[in-house]
Length: 195
Image (cartoon, rainbow, N blue to C red; front, side, top):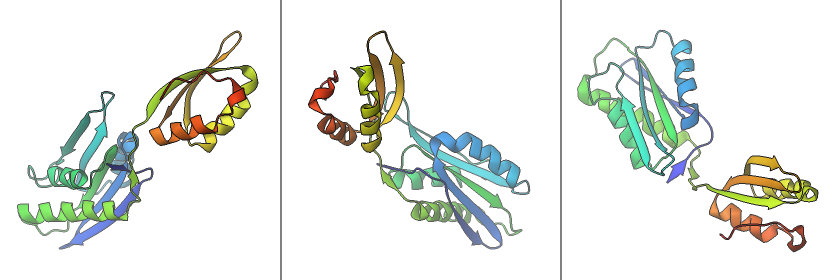
């Protein structure tokens, strides 16, 4: 599976109709849709599709035709995301009507081409599941641990200060965790769980 970290755009035009496709990480979807509706007040439709993993590691996906004939826009857009094996992404296609009706087949092709174009323009990253890990350290090890976490591209979720130790919560891919475990100096005295 693949994902993205940035927003990308691609414009497809046919018979004076303009289809502007935006692809983005799923967590930015709601705000981006609001922003696009305000920056494109004359657009006729805002077709959407998204796929993301929920807390149970299940794929949740949905699409909306936003007033286009049923099945001609949202579903084909979602099909492109599925075919590209994208996860944790959303796509919004802003449509400006050019005065010429495209028919149901023409709409399916136009939305498919717009989403294919934006997917091809995006920098796809191999999706890696992040695992939560908790461990303890001494106060004197904080700076060294922060350095190692950054070096291994591991995100710190929480750090709690107790009377005589520090509790850490992190999320990382298997590869990043293995790298972190391999680079932790033996004398640092971390209580790390087994991988």
